[in-house]
Amino acid sequence: MAEFEVLRGGSASSLRIRFRPGDVIKAESDALVSKTSTIEIGAGMDSGGGGLGGLVGGLLGGAARSMLTGESFFLQTFCCTGSAGEVLVAPSEQGDIAVLDVRRPMPGDQPQGCAAVMVTNGAFLCAEGGVDIQTRVQGAAQGLFSGSGFFLMRCSGRGRLAVSCLGSCIRYDLQAGEKRQVDNGHLVAWAESVHYTVGMATTSIFGTLASGEGIMCTFTGPGSVWIQSHRPQQVSTGGQKQKANQQVGLGGTIVGLCFACVFIIFLLLFAGAFLYAIMNGESVEWGGDGGSTRRGNGGRRAISGRTKMADEF
Image (cartoon, rainbow, N blue to C red; front, top):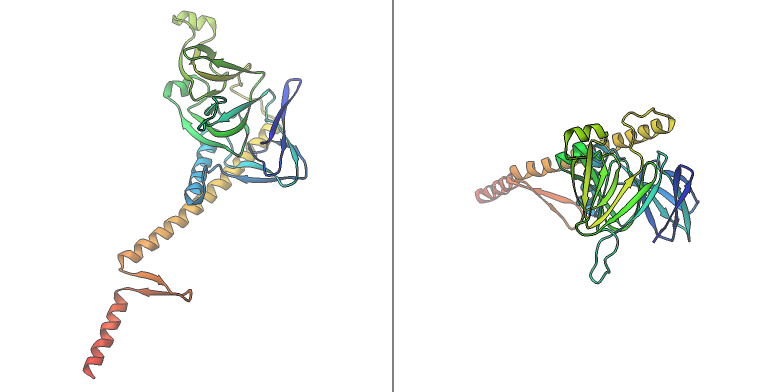
């Protein structure tokens, strides 16, 4: 298992990951700062399985993750090919980094970590290879007023997960029935076992408007909640780093969508040829010499013709 270490300096943090042979880490695009020569960089989609179903799931998951949650179509992957290695990653915005333990319960395991974690838009930084990433839709009230958007990233499986925050990252561990209110826009992640609702900050409309708080999210345990001390600005002032990240994300989205379109067209052509052969009563049999012979109504007519000629003679 790779070792995660958060390096905090001033108002910005980075994450140092120490690898053992065979360790794999998947990260957000353009998150890499530095690496050793024993780390091999790749790109892939979190398919959650192998074979054709895994490939289709990866394509659809990458498209949903890119268009709905604002993350990259492809995930950057790091693999240790030597005896050991090290990678330094960092989010595009200054702030803190939190390392979460995602652990699907197995028979005989002691309760620890979170079976699944919901991550808000733009908070995902990296995760171990055993963590599965999917896209989930939340309710209308939560999507409109919680500040986390309609679409979330659901991280499950077994491994460590790193999320980025604006300002400091604070974790609250809620007991069963315990409640914690959080101002909208400060959410980062929470355990799937936690239930939350959205409502006014006070019992009266005047108090809600006069206090300046507006909408509050109320979380009910059991489970953990991660929040950030600073709220992201609605309108960014821009900058070279942000523009570069937007260009990288747009390029990855275009490439991924083109690949998905080509793959879908290939499947449609194959299905069309198969249906055409069935409708015309044709079948293809593969011979032992690697060749193929096509049989159908025409072949039967030819055989009948030869039989008739033989009878005449």
